[in-house]
Length: 447
Image 1 (cartoon, rainbow, N blue to C red):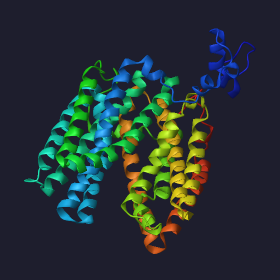
Image 2 (cartoon, rainbow, N blue to C red):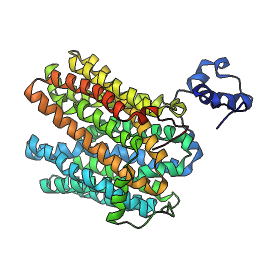
Image 3 (cartoon, helix red, strand yellow):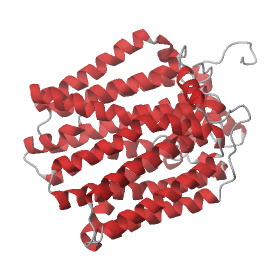
Image 4 (spheres, rainbow, N blue to C red):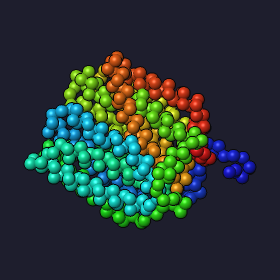
């Protein structure tokens, strides 16, 4: 595309486009407006919610149910430890959840590409409501069966794996390409908000009313989401999408071949999570700082606090064109913040650095998801979003394993600092191997 003088528009032209549109509409230049008006340009962009009723219903439903999921995330291990007094028994919950998260998202993506995605969301939420009901009954004092907790944890992770690719692949159907970064920021905002509020609310409900009440609250949030999704219009599969089969799953994996930009959205994230994800060491860090369970909770919440703040001030994300470069810079910042966290001996500094790391991770996630949803054709969206979910689920688990193993051989600070450094070095290596990702331009998206 050229301008009136036959030249290619540069980055400044693209960045000024929204400003020029506003001036043509009779609005004064941004620099001449009051400071509170200028500040709105950096706040999270609500345009996707205003323009698309479908996206609005999807966002409202999922934002509420996400809080409920985080309530159960606290209640289930709390109940397991109260019954068994075994940290191993609690750890096995994570293993139960990891197995379906590693394998089922790709199948769920293929299913999402072959059927009405709204119907898939509704069916999955009926299952989630039923499972929350089982937990609520099992939370009564006369029950408390351990095996039920393991079975429900596995089934909930399986249902999540099957419906999340459908939910994520709906976003590009509901919003125009130029608003995908804004839509991704809004999606990240509710996820981070749920990660902050849900655990706190779960703890309050358990302490004040008991485990069953916490599970009933989760059930109510799934029911809310079901009502919101029921109000959406049907979302039939693309006319070029085939029926679900194992071949369709293989086609999704084969789609990655020869597409270095798309591959990079996965490899760069794996690099950040495997080398720079030290959450398994948070209890040891809290002990080193002289704190207890309260400090552990603060450390776990700090990255999400940073992510939530960045999502609130993500209004300029839709104007970023060099999105691959933005991902790389964000991961470098993540690695540097994690390394600094490993060297920190003061709680306040640990909190600040983890918040910076979380904010950088959120910024990276916005553009990685935007690139994926831009370069992947509609008939393949579900499968590729399923692959992304499998990567997102496995990366932190492998990162915890790496951090714990290195710490057992050396020390906790050394493991964290080494991981942050390797994360930064990994960006350099991957940038040399996949230069197309560094040069990716949203004005000319190529996979």
